[in-house]
Image (cartoon, rainbow, N blue to C red; front, side, top):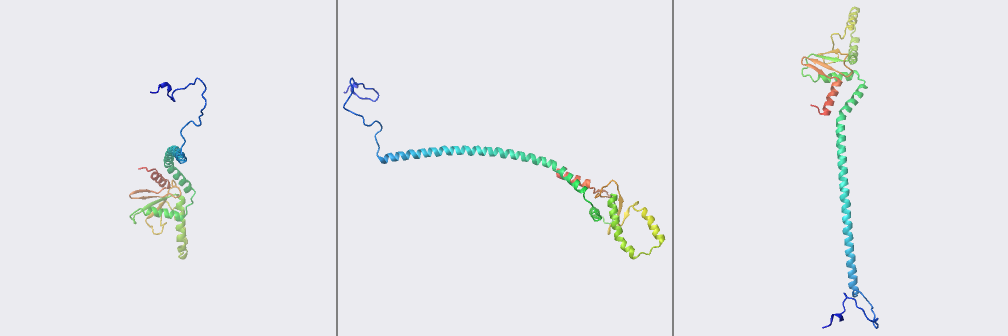
Length: 235
């Protein structure tokens, strides 16, 4: 048995009474490997490093994507909320804007006799009874336009058969002074059941018709209020 003092151990230091001589150390470390093994080991280390780097960057890219997606969702949510608020504000203000714009436009529109005639005929068409007597109320300006149209249409016929005496002409002139007091008739061809009256409270484009069933209100202000109610969704 070799005494412990005589064994060499990497865990113990060895001291010599005198400096050793006659030997040398040429290499200290792991034993050398063949070239093919060394190359294989280097390739393995390279591949392992590349895989670790790829995994690291993929993790970072995923973090960036998740952060971008989160920010995008937050931005879209804010935009959606803001859009909803703006649409709600527009829904509340749109009826007033539309009605205000219509009032300004209609106020600048000059109606002629044909336009007034079309308004009256459109309202009369809502009555089922064609023979029913109807009272039509227009502003003085619109009624004057209808009277002028009626005179223009009847004038050629009067010129062709003009045979009345001076007494008849005088009577006709006197009667003209009182035209409209009891309403005008025969201002629209084909509508003998209409009787027209002036109403100074109406404005150009307004029309109201009275029948035995009540009053049909065709004032522009009334029509605009109906449009406003429909836009606001009022019951």
